[in-house]
Image 1 (cartoon, rainbow, N blue to C red):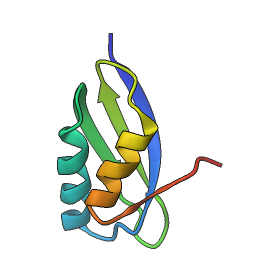
Image 2: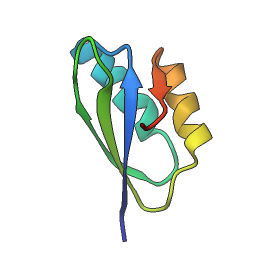
Image 3: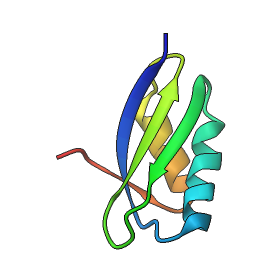
Image 4: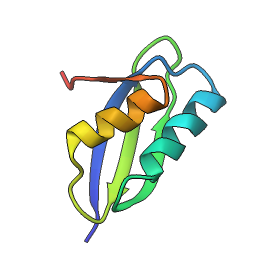
Length: 74
């Protein structure tokens, strides 16, 4: 059974940003798909489907590796 989790990521402004974040998150163990709702100038919504629950620290590290920042959920 898949688990779907939404994250907010700041700093993404274009398709290259989306590709970078998608690539880094896709490398995490268990990740099946990554979908990004780009919102330039605001936090973008990133939806990750995975076979197991993801470690938030691992997600944060992947997002930061791509050059962006995970925003705490409101």
